[in-house]
Image (tube, rainbow, N blue to C red; front, side, top):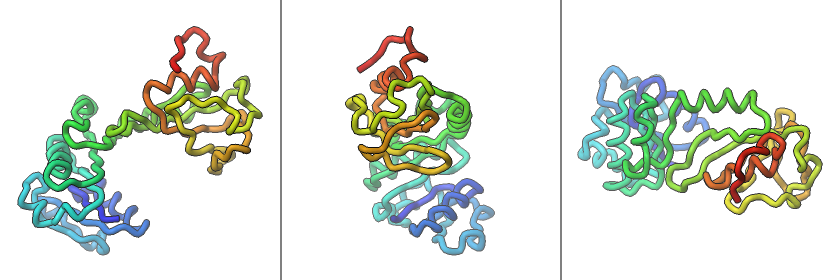
Length: 228
């Protein structure tokens, strides 16, 4: 996979290093000469240019890339890069860094953003995920599909403890993608039984989130209106 990263600061370089280790091709773009540290990520390609300028992205041949990551420290720049990548070059997937939480509402499909990554939101979600049992925790939203990656830890009194995955009447727009159990990842095969304390990861439509809570932890949500 070919990935272009706008912003070669600490965040951009760290992401580039991880992706290179996973076998992807990486291009780093930054307008600041001091950010061009090719020795830090020697396997990547580097361009000294302003990623907000159409001519720079044309030089980079952005249409050849599968993913564009807007990782600068400027929210306006990240929005412009995402929009250009989508509208001018037809890039399949854009990921944009949100630096200031007040700007998060802007990072949507209207600005060409498929996935917005907000560090404060992710940190709060991870804290909730670590301490919450029976409540659904939204880890991040998939902007282009009105769905989210969500987590729920099975309480001891769940009516589905000991029940096979294939026998659970899951909400229509919720897909169980993984079971985290005893520090290992379990594939949610139909014959695998659910256990108390399992951390269940779903890709779910927003309208199905409440239904998942009522299904798996009804005693925690007796007074809440359910959604099917």
